[in-house]
Image 1 (tube, rainbow, N blue to C red):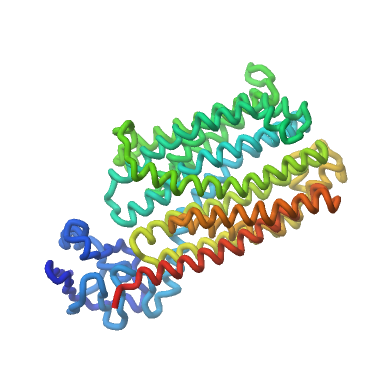
Image 2: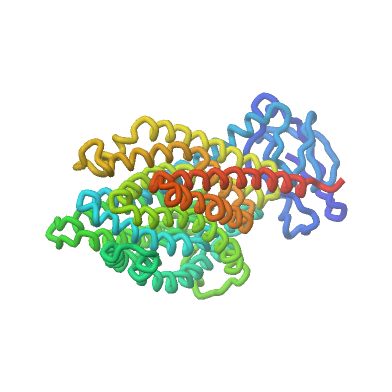
Length: 551
């Protein structure tokens, strides 16, 4: 390839002839975004581009013909014009190729993320399964305790979750900015240390909090006992999320997956030993489940940290260097993005936790059925959540590089894939609800109140699966555009101005009890999905318009 740049006029002279592009589409090779207005230092020496394609559409084996245009404007393939600073649109015949390549790239990243989410969820499912076999009372108390724990965990993980889009934008602008990536992660550690102490204080006050919400005294006392053990795992859970966001953003999600699979085994053995008193350990029952889960959080954080400082591809970021060095802009950005992100997830999660509190007023059988039924859609939700996490990175990389079309494409590909998966899970929940319920309560006879309630709840869960997948993929795609405040307000309105009032109306006023509460949950998710999808469609169009070069 031959390049010649006029340093004064900012013109790039390029020679090429595209000989394979029309047949095969255009390569997804790395592209360099030219911004002459930033000067030669920002652009880098043009000679360094010999190892990469001129833009994402130029095939690696192109031979060049002569073109003279401003460097920030276009390159010419002989049959199409492609904007170097806005390289998302596919050329003639390339649109389907672009979508397929985006889907493949998304799935390569999303698959380990989704499995990691499932593994993370398996820890809760293991606790639920073990405690269900221990006693219904222990299961109900754990459900109430987890309500408080997830409030603290979701809020604490807000800045940790902001690490991923922050790194994606850094790498989108300059893929060699290892120092900036390290600074983002370092400030993620700082944010975790700042968030953990006040949230621990909340967890240790679980019993009075539950009594304040009108829960039965015995259930509140047992939940407080459970949370006393589990709470000490919270700081390590937040630290793990920081490290996981880092490994995801730099394209190594398998690291977190491997650690989480080991953590599931660790937690399962801990539950088996401490709940039932095996391997020579005391029979602790409900507190044993809390101890096992806290230890698994510690194991996960330490293990993933060791992977990050020893794995060659991750070690180069030197995460433990200069830990005391403050970086104000990155810390401010993590909290600016992270607090709305935390509140967004909190609005949704607390609607479901409020539903658990409502269920507690209907009796132990209803609460136990709710805990079993909510576990199933929570597990299926982990897959579109993993897809959404991948979309955050894919959209963030494209947006950081100024490629609005690629960002929009990445988001919609993620939304469609998430909806398709949830359609399959919806069918399974409709076909096998009783068999699923029996997995958790094998000792219950068919037609028992707990089984019957669980089946009815699962029917509602099947109805909201698709919209649940759409809303999380759309929200995560918006996160990749660094749009955090609008999704926060959308979530607050959808879940607490629409979903919660309907839960209360149908559950209490209409006398439908648990079934009415579940109908309200479904309505809140539907509203969120519609508005978030509209928001991503509108904002991604605006980003494309903003990225168009001035004529």
